[in-house]
Image (cartoon, rainbow, N blue to C red; front, side):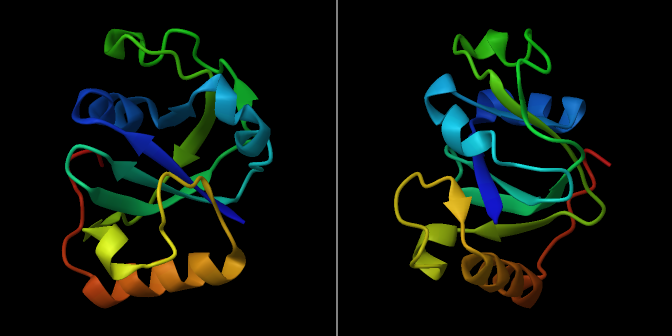
Length: 131
């Protein structure tokens, strides 16, 4: 399984600077299933851009960094640390991958392969800003 996290323009830099993605406690039941080595993706809801792939560096946990994302005025305690090598981006993923319906969090293995294939096909830009 892989997992999609969401960010905003306000939280995106912090996600990359801390190599930490978070979600609300409401989604902890799903987030807690993330294990070390699982693929993770990030969608910026303001721009509609998907970034990835990332790899979970450890099992997800509540409040790995209890101060993360506080500047957004929201609480995202369901967290996972990530690492990355080559980060690609996919513009308008919802129009290109029909299975991305709404704000789903978990992807099946088949959906993960389709997403990775699309990222590689588009292979448009590397993201160096956070490297």
